[in-house]
Amino acid sequence: MVLNTDFSGRVALVTGAAQGIGAAIAKAFVEAGANVFLADLDRDGIEKTAAALGVKCFALDLSDQSATADMVSSIKEDQDQLDILVHAAGGVRGQIGRPIEEVSVDDWRKIFEANVDSAFCLAQAAAPIMKEAGWGRIINISSGAGLRPSLTGIQAYAAAKHALVGLTKQLSLELGPFGVTVNSVAPGFVLSNPSSIKQWNSYSEKVQQEILDATHTKRLGEPTDIAAAVLYFASESASWVSGEVLSVDGGRS
Image (cartoon, rainbow, N blue to C red; front, side):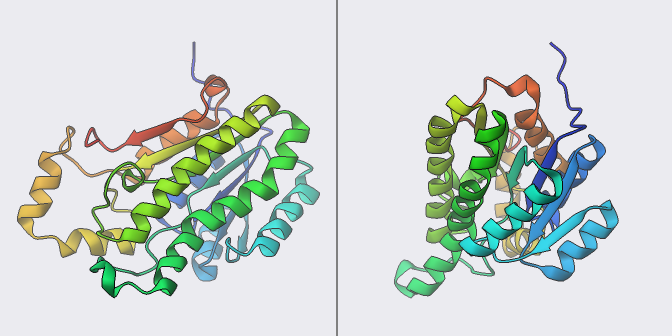
């Protein structure tokens, strides 16, 4: 079997594409021939990435159910299809690890909105289109924090990424009979954006070395490492792979 990563004729939506992992995934799909749309909360960032790739973009809060539904409807009206949804938006929203008694309910909810509510709203809007077509791929970018405690120390982030893994598995069960696969890529430590760089720099040299020593490949990840895994899940070669969480972490898991 030869892995088919030619996505000519496919329409893909990549969220969290203003920078880092999302931008690398978007670039990979463009290079593979897909018609790609981008979305992110960061208007300046997403417009810059879209201009560089020559694609269309949307700036919105993906946890806003109405706004997200309008975006997906706009893509459907423009292309008459939406084949691939890659949800890479999320993150820690500028928060740092603190004792649980210092965490406000508002801070807790902000991270769930960014990581879980957004995934729900996107899947809710995209699923009917994919079901009607009898083909679709939904790929959620979770995290190693969705499989074990988070290196960030942020309780809401670990809980939200675990929830995203659960949603992925449940949607796989629900949508599989309609030809739609739902999977997740769980990145390890990737220096992909200001938040991850800030986190890495906050560690002592000793802790940084311990992380590298615990990683089989003895290096941190690159955004392109994650993009390659996403392209596999989106390919025809992965048509019988669903409900899976693939750790892409250099063996740290």
